[in-house]
Length: 352
Image (cartoon, rainbow, N blue to C red; front, side, top):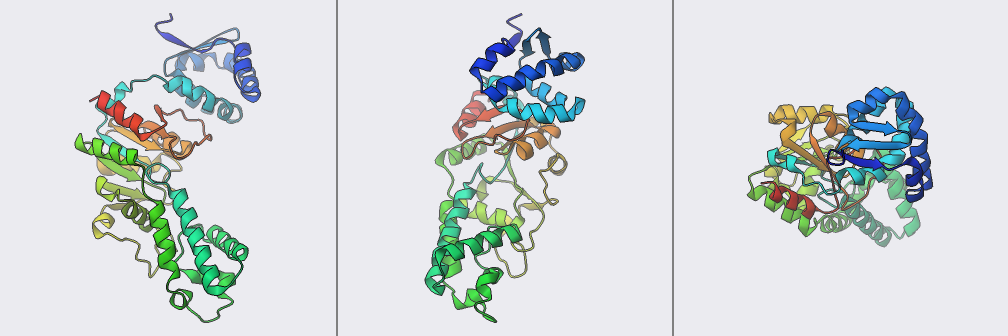
């Protein structure tokens, strides 16, 4: 049997000593849940004997997905506690043979290809410095205004719309602040663009996939203009055949904005619905538009709920990227968990 089954947990008691207290207790509490859903567990490839759970290879991911419709409240309480620690046992050591049949690579953009968080921090830091320099206002006041504005308009990109900084605009009635202080927006944008440069191993991965004739696409929850701006600033636009985005943002894509900096990149944009990653519908639309098989497609992204769970719901293979941030939320188990772009590059080359 050892050749067919992997041990998920030698015993609940044993795992309580090796995992965190909360996770150990959650596993202990799950025994009754497992016994009440014996048929479901067998479907997932799981056998429970006393306090011992044995799971067929890959079964944990299927188990986590099957639990939710069986008893949503219990699953929502239990699965997030154990998914992170169990995920490593389901993907470790895989050779990813399924990649032999994958021809289409769909990538999330922010915090997967591009360090967008660093870009926002650099832009807002420079915007604060410039506003303090030109207006004489206290840095704490300016920083707080930027934060409030970002939350109000649901955007971090507003350097060329200083009129949106209402507490500051009120100090300059009837004045166009971007015209009054023309140096501010360019300085903030330059800081932003400089911080968006991708890691070299991201570039190496995209070069390798392109050389192998793979089809590369971006799927982002960003607005069309912001997506193109970041891809152009990072130098990554050239790799992608299509850029799938959320619907237009009233500020980022509003009147007077000219962030579609490259006409060739802008022509690649396909605008989807608002919040296109919240469920599998956005992924299904992509599959339909590209006329591709989900089982020949790998989605790689950092966010479990939007990039992994939703893509799996559409039938795609998935890889969770941990190299910019670790997302501990969600319950979906990806087909691959990646600590670096180089890992994916090596797996693809191994499975040519």
